[in-house]
Amino acid sequence: MIRDLDWEAAINVRRSARSFEMNPVEESKMNMLHSFISEMELPFEHDVAIRMFKANTDKKLYTVFNSPPDGMAFIANTDVLSVAKVGFVGEMLVLYATSLGLATCWYGHYTLMELERMMPHLGEYAKLANPKWGYGTGEVQGKRAVCITPIGYWKQEGVRLFDRMQQAVISYKRKPISALLEGDTKEENLTPELLYAIDLARKAASAANSQHWRFHVSSDLKTITISMPVGYKHIKWEHPDVDLGICACHFWLGLVMKNIDSKVSLEEEHGHAVWRFEI
Ligand SMILES: Cc1cc2nc3c(=O)[nH]c(=O)nc-3n(C[C@H](O)[C@H](O)[C@H](O)COP(=O)(O)O)c2cc1C
Image (cartoon, rainbow, N blue to C red; front, side):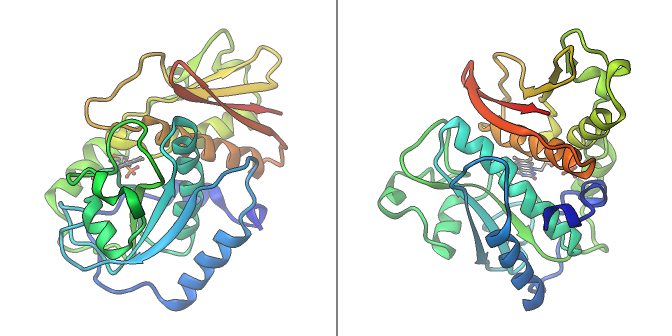
């Protein structure tokens, strides 16, 4: 099923939407999302839960824009590796939703207590939850909605100034491959297939568009790792491993599109996730 979709097109058209029509997603598309979730086969084990929720169409959840009626939450434990898997698994859903013509926006700084009211999931940990935004900083007890996304229809008129600025100044800008390669293997040494996969990977979304992923390709071009610079920290975003998972998802889809099988593994180094692809 995964091989049948045009992931390149989905990656190229996806943009974070922050202005929505207040219409629910049609039942047929919801059913397709549910089927995709239950049939999705990924190259690693995970226990990320994907839950659809119904939201009030006010600003309480996302604070800077009105929520459309539908949303999707990515729920997992909060250790570094689980959070990295949230990025990968969640991005499969975000891209699939995009291919159905739905708009999305990865969101980390949503209001947790508002989400809990609409979609109870914290159980005994509800009282420990960060009442401000997101699930908190670092590893916490129990499973949390690490990120959420609205799902719906982009409202074209009335695009807010903030949106336009994001699009013009931040969103469409991505670092070139040469700035993201570490080690001795340079861009000109890569095969067309690896260049293709890295090009899709560099187009991944990241909080505040920080693009903190770095690629290392072994000299025999058989092992590719995706990691972040040692000691990386972002002043506003507490969970940069999510973004790394999104990037790894794009890279894997690039390999899939080129019919290249890979063994995917994930380990923690210097407190952050490192994705390894052996092809
Ligand atoms: C993990 C993650 C968390 C994000 N959290 C927020 C958020 O809390 N608020 C927001 O306005 N945008 C958020 N974004 C959207 C980013 O700002 C956006 O992806 C980035 O600027 C690139 O733009 P693009 O998605 O249109 O390509 C988040 C993105 C990611 C990947």
